[in-house]
Amino acid sequence: MAAADRAAVVAGTPAIDLMERAGAAVADAVLSRFAPCETLVLCGPGDNGGDGYVVARLLAEQGWPVRVAALASPRTDSAKAMATLWTGVTTDIQEEIQATLYIDALFGAGLSGPLTGDAARVVHHLNATPERVVAIDTPSGLPGDTGLPQGVCGRAGLTVTFHARKPAHVLEPGRGRCGEVVVADIGLGESAATLFENTPELWAPRFPWPTAASHKHARGRMVVVSGPAWSTGAARLAARAGLRIGAGLVTVLSPPDALSVNAAHLEAVMLRPFDSEAELETLATDVDAVVIGPAAGINETTLMNVLALARTGAALILDADAITVFRQDPEELFSVLDRDDVLTPHPGEFERLFPGILDSAPERISATRRAAELADAVVLLKGPDTVVASPDGRAAVSLNGSPWLATAGTGDVLAGYIAGLVAQGMDSFEAACAGAWIHAEAAQSHGPGLIAEDLPGLTPAVLRRLYTGT
Image (cartoon, rainbow, N blue to C red; front, side, top):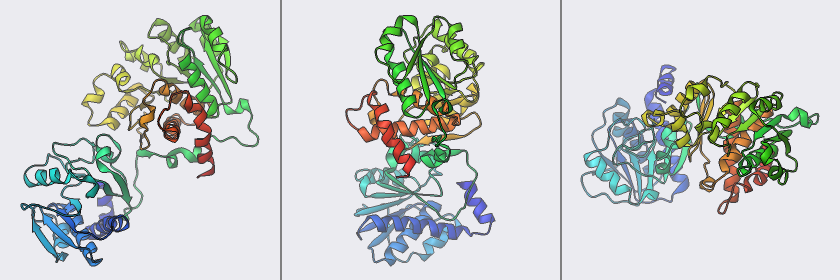
């Protein structure tokens, strides 16, 4: 954002014009959501405070009863200029502050230290009624680049930011403190980026829809490796998900002892036996994508199966046990992965494969990017703010996480979605992004009572909305 600001100024847009546009965007958001009411604009000494002075002036021009409470005198040239244009009432911030609506313009995304003194006291007061707070850029006390509060941190019912969301708007716990987030265009133009919001705009233009000439062999071949006889359900969930999302041919590769139980539950999904890693490698030689890990078992058999599959050239989607089984020697796994392979760990599995990275990184985006670089594969770190990172530096954060996914087996479905899309020729990074988005949308469409078995059946409705653009 700082680079975009500088580029706009260098290109000839005065900084004061950018501040006027930012303040106008906040005022427009307020005017469209609230009726005129007693409003207090809390202005800090920097450019965030300068934006606040613009908001106060524009609301007052619309007839709103507005006051300003300044934490300190403006320190930047643009903020000083906007403070001069404010001719309304200014309240002493050290006095008790009461209003119907508060505009938090104390500190924005660039905050580098914890709030203290009057700023901390005021923010603590505002937190009693966050639904009456509109934050400019980020709630005060929330650094834009991490989403991790530093001590006292504000909450808002509405946050207006500029040009693009910041990590604080998409990563927990910051995301939960921002309320509704409005991204306002203030004329900064396009800027090069490798960090994205995981929405259909990112990948929908390359989604592998069939054509009139498509047939099942052209829509990709996907296999899922089953666990032993008492642990077969997870593989079937992944297989059904891959079939629902469009893979043309899906097969469960099963140990002999699990054949009968798998056969009793499979219909459109095919079934083949294997008795050794050599047989598994042969069966997977001509497929496009493989899922291994769901209920596979944390044992030597799973480890050898992964290594055998890595020799086939198929894209590997590794989940659960296929990740954990390499906890003693992650490099053994990394040495056989390709850039079209995908790892789908939850935080515990991530720690086993990438020890210390999540704790030492400033936030989940940096940690996932580092993991993708080390593994030389796509990494999807699960959570309410799921992050997908590619070894080429691209990363995306999901905005539609669903609490209904917090139940056993849903991760197996996600692995199947990703494999099904990769089998159809989708780029692995975009397939992981699309799979995560569809996964959450399907869960949200069901809501309470969701179990993993529901998800494949919910997939067609989500795909239809994508296909029709509705």
